[in-house]
Image (cartoon, rainbow, N blue to C red; front, side, top):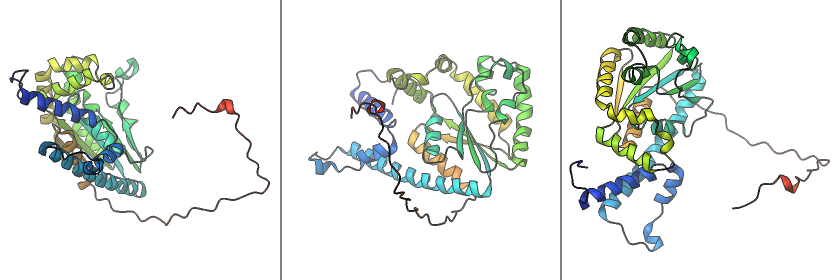
Length: 313
């Protein structure tokens, strides 16, 4: 979409409305959305859509089919992690509105939260500010048989803290000196570490922020710091480049995800993650549902009507 095109340009408006519609429908749960997508318009007496809508429908069907396939593989991975007592850490970083949360949601959607959990730490409190910088992250690391997804991580110091002036130059330099060894310690302890950077363009972030501003159900995602990050785009770019130069190591490399298209980004990220773990299918015993025991003396007491909620639906 050309940012310099006139506001009354029909082609630009059509593309804008298409993207806004895609942004809204992306918020739906995949199961519900697939129900809508699987309906045959011809059976409902609806004429065939135009070529653009038909191409989008086909891609959406491919997206859902592939996403569900990858999620089935994630379940296999989960079983393998539990059986082998593996420890996995996945770090998700990127600019605000880059799509980290959406990718994390699709990874955890079908998994057991006791096995795969998300660590999204708030700003440090006064006590935590006096601790060793990495200390508050350590308590969230996985035990054997667990996967932890960090929705932002210790790399806050290389990004937002550095740009917004929440740390000194000395603290920032100490972070860059320490983090490679810290991550090598994690690897030596048996943790599998993955670092993903979700990359979007200036124009795409602007569009996603505008969608959040206009959508009451997404406004909570915007903080004053998020809005301030728009002004500081170039400062964040410089911080990212320094972070890559100082922390992209052979032991613990960064993996950049092209996230301008959210759906492709999710598929690519999950596929890459799965391809780098030697998991296998775990054989389970056949599950047999036991017969319910009937006791002739059992009497079920009625629940008082006042305890029932109104049945509005």
